Image (cartoon, rainbow, N blue to C red; front, side, top):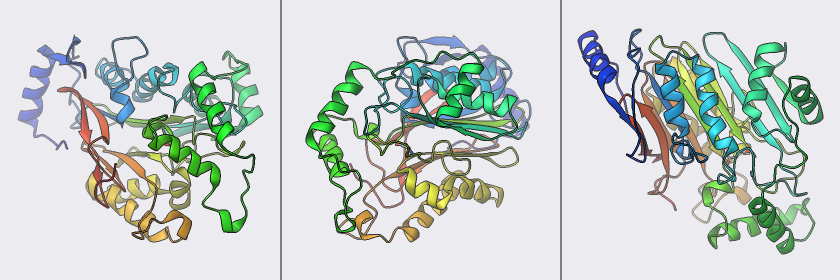
Length: 375
Ligand code: ASP
């Protein structure tokens, strides 16, 4: 976790960083860091969910590397974090986001996204958007050119078309289509189970496919959230996803909902989420975290406060394991205005990391679990 630096340290770090090279997650790529570091007392920092330091879509930068580079080159922070998540939206290897995201129960890829611009106090979102590979850019347009905060489904698509976005018939890839077919084959067509059956055949089959290694656990639920702050203390964030795999058509998760999948307040910081969206919508946890930052809690403690709220509100037996604890996971990526950050979740574990990029380069850091580790 990062801390505020005093002025002497800031100047020293800025000078060193200006002449230094930024080593990427692969360790292979070096590029100069701009001198525009730590002018305003905030430490330029980008954080993201773990996929923000994995996928490169055939290029040489991950999401956090691109966003950090752009921020230190003077780009608008929201432009930078959105340019970062665009890499993951376009990469068909990440089946939780954008092009190639796992589809809904009818085999249709529908995308959710929202973004918030701290200093401009603007926000925009799209939900259940079909046919546009980079929904985060449409969310940004909603923020910039409309009087609204959220457009959905056909209206969102028509808006995107009017804004000049390409609309494609189908965002499936061979991989996402094959996985959907497999799921379809294994389930019956009942997506509305009887109350006594609420453990949900479809969800069980999906989780079994995860257990069998057919689906990356991070991609059954899966999303990217990316938050950044520049040297002036401008805080922005974006979240983008294909949502829950094989959801009921029309289901919208937390990702496009302000206060749930993302919240930014330029006075305090940003929080975003991946994982079980329903738990997050119910608790508006990203908003809660930013409020806790405002009260002076550290990013980690603010995130843990929201996770405790989720635990308290999870009483439905179908959502509890035999140990009485939630049988799902929710992750939060928390960045305060100074550049301090944390990744927290109900459950941590060796595979659970979040992405960070500072003047020291990109890293994948462990996510801390409120309830311990679970694979
Ligand atoms: N939170 C997203 C949703 O519920 C999915 C995820 O992050 O895994 O749609």
